[in-house]
Length: 387
Image (cartoon, rainbow, N blue to C red; front, side, top):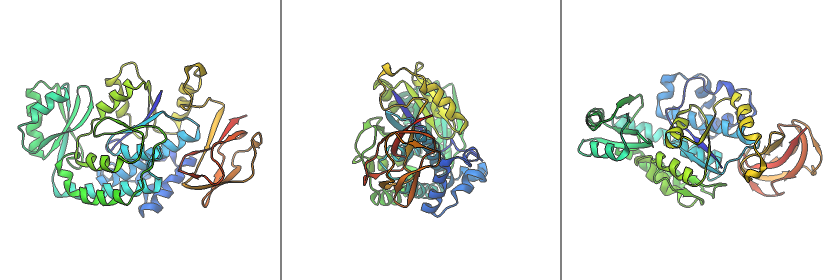
């Protein structure tokens, strides 16, 4: 079973969008700019590392970069059996799984980033990674420290504390005294996933209340409790709780391993989540898609497997491709029929005002969307066998 993982704030870096600039999936960057009124292309191509460390920039840029990579993977016909995202990445997981429409998601992320930036400006805060100490031991070590909390349970022996600078300094000393091998200060713009974020709660809740949540295509594992969710109804409350609550990423990964996931594909900038998977399960296969150059390796790693594995719905074979929706809206086919030869760039129909164009040449095996069906961004429309 294949799981898609989506990174959070801190994975961004200057120029991370440059490798995608000529890829078809770059169109999402333009859609994100239109939806938010911000120049997302500038963030992905020209913003400096210092600019991207600002919460309002890093969250929007990381979300869109990850969605571009996800869209590219979807165009190859590779699918997942489950989703999970770390902190900000949870919003990417919800958009990728269809719980959130892309336009709604990017607006929600932009509002979240702005609100958290304001909260961080109001409360001076920082974070530090505690290595070599289990979560319970870290909780016990900082229990008596003022203005210091556990923010992230990332993996066995990897926990993040956050709070005021003085609180994190005192918490770091307490963790070292409890046996931590190392405590590493993190270059971040605030004390995320702590009560320091409470000033952002009202703005985020208002934005969440204006957003439609749907059922996911596959389960999404939540940060706040590590539990899998297969409907959209719980997510407004889960996102509310996530803002100021700890990220239980270790518990999400452990639950996925227990549920039978054996391959974890990190989609978006950075490779931090793959390292956390390795700490959680030594036997799990770890793959990354951060640039277009990674797509061939992903196909090679997944495409040669035997159908006897019974992994229906997880991936297509190297000769098979999916044409996916370029937007959310109603699908209207162009009268193309199964068995027809499709050329690269051929129009198969429309979704709202957008043309559904094939990025591949091949034989049309089957339409996966019905005429008049309302589809979501990146939802499979048709199945081709490349020739």
